[in-house]
Structures are given as C-alpha cells and as structure tokens.
Amino acid sequence: MSGAVKVLDKGWVRVEETMGGDDAVVRGARICYQSVAKSPEADERLIRRLIRSDPGHNTVFEHAVFRFNVKCPIFVARQWMRHRIGSFNERSLRYCIAERDYYAPADHERLDDYREHMDRSFDLYEQLLESGWRREQARGLLGTAVYTEFIWTVNAWSLMNWLRKRLSKGAQWEHQQYAKAILAIFTEAMPITGGAFEEYVLKS
Image (cartoon, rainbow, N blue to C red):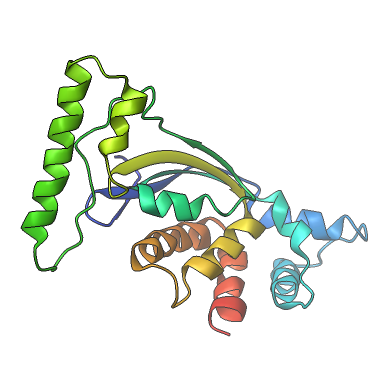
C-alpha cells in the first residue's frame, strides 16, 4: 500500500490525514494569554515546557489530530481499542468475507503446525459460507491472529498516552512494533512535540 509502513509479516500502518501539528499546540497555548511569539525558538521552548510540566497541560495538545489506517492481528486491535480516547471503525466480518490472511510469529518450533491449523480453519470457514452459513456465524472459527483493518482518529495528547504505554517494556512485542512505526510518523508530522515527548517522557 502506498505510503504505508510495514509492520510484522503482513501488517502496516499509514497516516491518512493530519490536522494542526505543532502550530496547533502553540495556538492553543497562546490564546490563553493572547501572547505572540517573538521568534520560532520561543514557540519551540513553549512546547518543550508544556511537555515536561507536571501536572501536564494536555488540552493544548488535543488540537492536533491524526487519522491512521492500520492493518494488524485481531489480538493487537483488541488491545489497541482499550484506549478509548479516540475514534475507531473496523472492517466487519459480519459484512465482509475474511481474507486468508493471518499473523505467523517467526522462529518458533511447530510453526508448521500453527500454519496448518490456521489454514484448516480458513478451509472450514470457506466451506461453511459455501453451504449457506451466515458470515457473522462462520467467522467464529477464525482465531485472533487473523488480520483486521481499522481507522483510528486520535488527538496528539491521547496518541502520546498510547505511545507511552505501548512502547513500555511490559507491552506485548507485536503491539510495540506498531507503536514504533507510529512514533516515527508522529515525530515527522510534529517534530517539536515528538522530539520533546521522546526526550522528556520516553527517555525519562
């Protein structure tokens, strides 16, 4: 997919649209005092101060927004969607036919058995559909390693909260890979905020 960053064996993430960026953070902060920056460096200092402040000034970061398109295993999506401050819409296997597309972890013993099980599940799924089963019922055969696709609209503050949790050492490895990909997109789109977030939050 054009513009997509590959993640895992068959997954990806891409940004569909952004709004505001670092300028939106500055605008949100400066309207409180009707202040104007005397230089670009002053705006950068402002963002860095806001990121490292405690308690945090989260509302100013909520004016920058991202919409991502994600393809990931269902088990990653279910963890992802526990982060409720954002909007999700997912490809529905009630209405769509599942593609024979599943995640297979590398370098494991009995990987052939794993693949055989997944393929047999898809064989039976397709047979049930051909015999007249409803998609919403036949999908019950398929495991959480099957790939799904969704869009996620999220503001920069909530995105940083997700990144902080999903880049932690305790996060599941597969989910960490998506967080790393999105961190790179985030820091490219919002270099000042992203850089300060890495310095003061992720590395602290």
